[in-house]
Image (cartoon, rainbow, N blue to C red; front, side):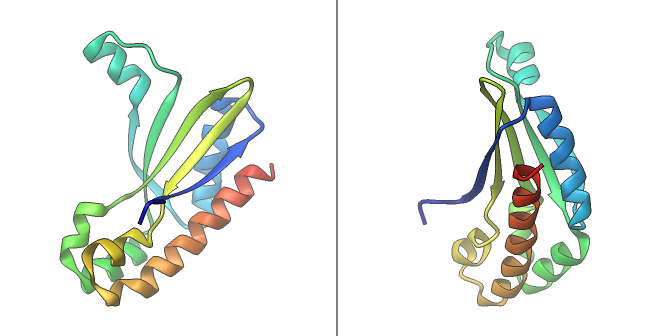
Length: 132
């Protein structure tokens, strides 16, 4: 599998898009469990400057539970990461891990239904963010 993310480019500033992603994740039942500000971390640890970029660890507990029941090893692939990156010029790139990676990577067919549902919800979130 070469594509492992679902993506959209949003014609809106970074900060506005981060807020929209949080809101739309909640609208499809995902909470944000973790947050990594890559720009701040790389600046603090390596004194490297990059454009604003944040990783939001999104989780929908019923889906996570079903996935873990199908294959406990999938915990290593959770939560679903959603990355918001300043693309410059007032545009922002939003990428979400494609849940279809889980059954393909693990070889566990029982993960297909949960991956399909998670993919549909994340795609709906991306569409809602891009249509704002």
